[in-house]
Length: 259
Image 1 (cartoon, rainbow, N blue to C red):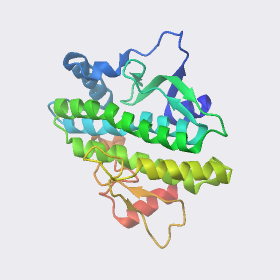
Image 2 (image 1 turned 90 degrees about the horizontal axis):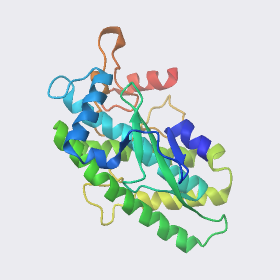
Image 3 (image 1 turned 135 degrees about the horizontal axis):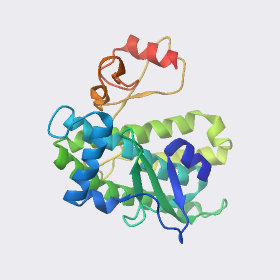
Image 4 (image 1 turned 45 degrees about the horizontal axis):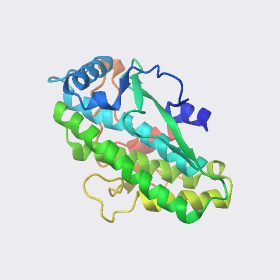
C-alpha cells in the first residue's frame, strides 16, 4: 500500500515517532500570511502571478492538485481497508518545484479483511464526512485569497474522485477479487451519494466521454476548465487537458489515442 500511494498519489505515510520533513501543514493554509506565501511560491513555480496573469489559475490548479491527496485517502480505504489520518495536525505537504505538491500523513487504523461489513460502511461514511469538513475551509480560504470560484474548485476535486472510482471499478487488475470489487462499489455509492450534500460535494454531475472510435475505459469530462493552459507560453504552453470541457470531441479523441 505505501508504495502504491507514493507512486500514484505522491503521498507518504509517516511513522508516528518520526518528525515530518515537509515544511507545510494544513493549518498554514488557514493562516493568511502563510497561505499567501505558499500560493505566491506555487504561482512562481508555474509562471503565474497572483493579482495578475493567471491568478485565478493558481486557485483552480491548487484544488486539482490537492485532490490527489483526497484520492490517496480513498484508495487506502477502498483498496486496502486502511484509514489515513486527515487531521490538520497530521497532514503535511511540500511544493515539488513545478507547482505540484507531495503529501504526508499518519496511518490512523486498519481493518481486518473479514471485518464487519456494517462497521465498514459506517466508517466509509464517516471518512467522507471528515474529508468534506477537512476540505471546506481549505478550498474556501484559497478561493477567497485568489479570487477563484470555490464552486469550480469543488467541481475539479469531484471530477478526480469520480474518475478514480470509475477507473478502479473498470480495471480488474486493480480489484482482482469480486469481494474487493463489491467494497469499491459500496464505497463509491457512499462517496457519490447526493443526499444531504450541499455545494461542497463529490457528487457533481459529470459527463462521460462518448465517441464511436473510443473503446477505452470510462473517461469523465470536467465541468469546468482548470485553467492549466495558462501555464507556460510559446512552445512550452501547457495546452488543454484531456478532460477539459473546452476540447471538442475529435480533439479529445486524438489526445486520448496518442497516450
